[in-house]
Length: 138
Image (cartoon, rainbow, N blue to C red; front, top):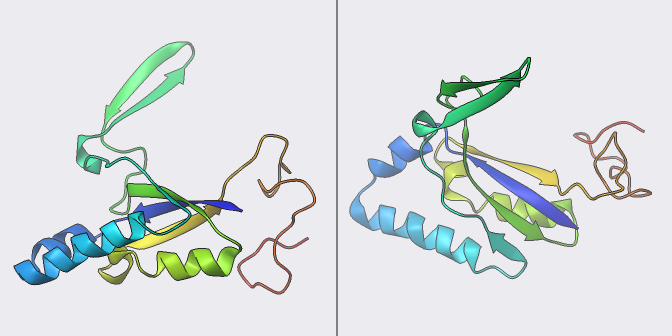
């Protein structure tokens, strides 16, 4: 199963910048270790949300807005793809992402496949894991 791992920095960037140099080096090493994990396809580095431009089309007219689409601190700061056996493996890797321990978060989404179930985004016949409290009800 392929998962898209979305990294929300939140206050993590500021907290990481305030770390002693040795701890900052460890953060970079941790990200490098994740990128080298079997099954991981690293995403490209992203700029800061405040430098984003959001584009919408309304009534055939293109509208642009400075800043990220969402008006919140926790805009997506990075991403990567993980091919793993199951959600538990994805959760285990997400817990290694430095942003998650410095005030950010990692959102895990199953990669949506062409021909997938419109309600879940999963390949047809592959519903949510039974008994998992954060899964969609059947």
